Amino acid sequence: MPEIANFEDVQSKLIEIRGQKVIMDSDVAALYGVATRDINKSVKNNPYKFPEGYVFELSIAEKNELVENFHQFNLLKHSTPNPKAFTEKGLYMLATILKSPKATQTTLAIIETFARVKHLSRNIRQLSAPPDEQQKQKLMRKSGEIIAEIMEDDLSFSESETTIELNFAVLKFQHTIKKKKEEE
Image (tube, rainbow, N blue to C red; front, side):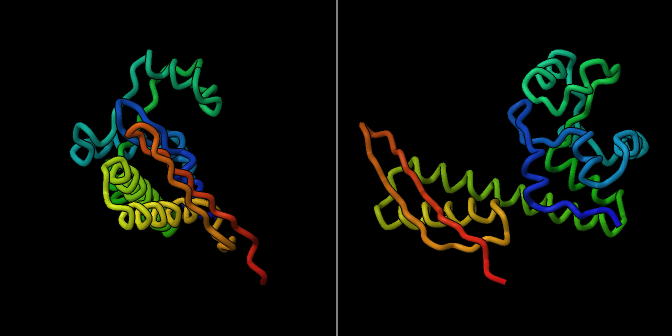
């Protein structure tokens, strides 16, 4: 059985296009262990499940920018069809079509990834507002935990350190997480 995607696999495929976090069709296919054409065929065969905002085709300029900025998309340079980008909603809808056990596990990894990224973004936004010192510490600690979850799962905390620096109304923070391999 092919390897099931984990959080790190999904997180590494997230990119931002048109102000949205998306995963490209070729990366979605890689996560699910199928061919890109199969993913795109699923979308084509179920257009009512993918309204505007769920999946979009990149323009030629966007495709060229993608190839220029991300080496893993070099194969698209000479590709005739423009790639498709799946938004979070599109990925959830795709999960209703793909029914294998691997598809279910991959979908769970995708859902976890988007949830953690949203939670971290929310914490960082809250840190820019002037909460009290105790709330700031709590937010930084939680943000550090989320970041730690993004890292390898087989590592455990050995210590955590937070530094706050205020500089002319600009908040800067640094959160260092020291991890070590768990003893088996």
